[in-house]
View 1 (cartoon, helix red, strand yellow):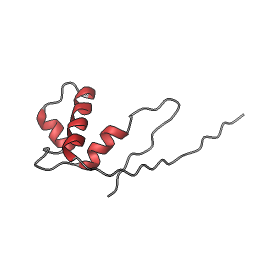
View 2 (view 1 turned 180 degrees about the horizontal axis):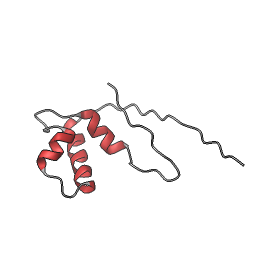
View 3 (view 1 turned 90 degrees about the horizontal axis):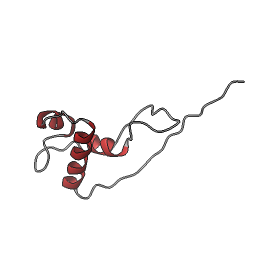
Length: 81
């Protein structure tokens, strides 16, 4: 018997009202997952941080994409403004 697996798309609309909080949370998560990361690596991934450039898309993906999901394969993470 062959099992058929379905692909599902989940959309979450997010309004960012505090870029600093978002950036700080994303940096914390990144450093938890990449314990050897230095500041340059974090900046390459997420931006320099407020008041400079913040890659909001990268921050959102860092926080909302769990990396693994039991029983699933995450095919893609993307963000649009």
